[in-house]
Image (cartoon, rainbow, N blue to C red):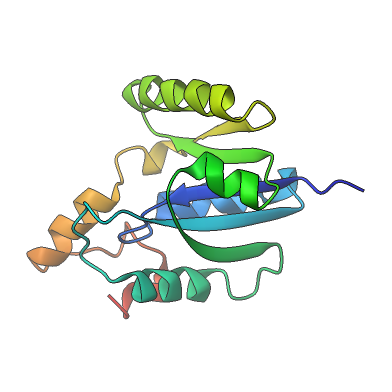
Length: 155
């Protein structure tokens, strides 16, 4: 039996309520979702990779269909190595769609048996981004509406 496995890739610096919502809503579509925390040496992160992984593990600690893995390189290579057929992406805006569509088409060209599945974010999450949360954290703003409750005290 072939399992329907999806990867939800991102930097998750930090994970937001929008990320959590997309993953939870996609659980019924897949047998397993791997939250893939991408490492990019060129990018400056607020939280080290170990903390980002720990935040995500805390949020999904009671969900047996979710696995959290760290990876370097292209998402399609991660898919190839782990026999993953689906890439899960959340869309907030039409600009997100255009950007993600181009990446999905490139991924399909590089690895023909991988499909990208898009889920629209809930309207109340359409403006939430890790960038906004990082800015709020830098200036000690209220993040309570933007990050999952289970990790708010860890941030």
